[in-house]
Length: 493
Image (cartoon, rainbow, N blue to C red; front, side, top):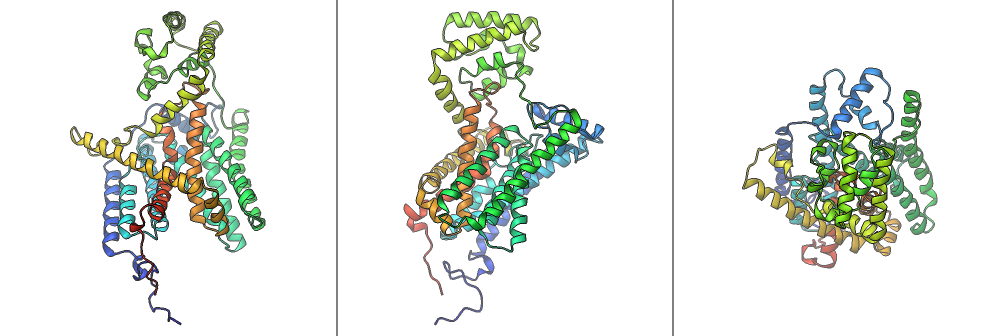
């Protein structure tokens, strides 16, 4: 019988586990990368615009009156959260506190991703783990919106923390009280994310339903001891929106999380019938740019014929006379008729092609370079090089994510062995891939019937931590099936 070593040894590297089975140089690289990300945070200034203005107004209203304002298309949850930072007393100082706090949220997510990278890639060579750490700590996608007042940073953190905690406590057999408290924490975190954005409420509800179905199909009799945890998870998840709805009822007499504003549905419905690029969306979907809403400025792809263009021009002229306020019933009906005629002529374009094009913009764009160009005031050609490198990083992550999806998360055998082995890390990888897919499908679906097509690229940012986990899974599976040379050799003592 081989005696146990005096110092714990990693069975894949035969090195002392005091350094996690990695060489000292790997940890030095990690420390330097962490310092660089912290330095980037410190160089960042904070501002807000667009929806951030309404969020700040909501926070000031809550701080002043201690009640919620009437419901709008977005929940009041984010404004309520901001009110805890003292926005009412000193908005400028509160903006700085909020920005710094959001940066720490991103930093905690990045640290969790580095820890997951080591756990997921434990059977690969150290160079691959260090490469994963480098990509995680240099990527801008998870922290892009930490410098401004948008709900994405909080939503991303609460969602990621919720599903990570859920995966950890669902499989592990801790003391019953500890396990139930962990599941309550996971449900509460997901509930908090759901009161910050109306579409996230739908997203998390669908994912939790998919989890229940997954467990019921693949558990093979081992589900009985998990049901108490699942019940506690769901109850704590539902409790947060119910508490917020009750607060709203006491404040304004309205029970709910959000109110769907359809005042401009006619015009926005017409916008959804053609695939606007993000740049075109920023012009024609925001009233701050209404001075540019002349028929000559709309792209040719917006119209199927010259007759449609002339009809649209006539309707816009009527609306302009009302200073682009909520259109009259007659004007709105004319917009809707124009929209319906266009959909009837090309239903596949409206319900299939346009959503696919919009989704492609979410995943393939140059967004992200401002994470570095703004804090460090980078100019061309340096800024162009940074944008190109970030685009390459996005391409690499897309390839790795698709590998994780196709080689792992979509394969029934992988789903089954994850449950049979109580492998909580693989479960979190599966949930991460599911989160990205459901979020993508949700945005594609909403783009067909919500507002002007939901083309703000920041809407996909809440899925970025999960996207990176899926890429880590793809890296592991590729080393197992395609690149065995990057695997460690088992040299167990």
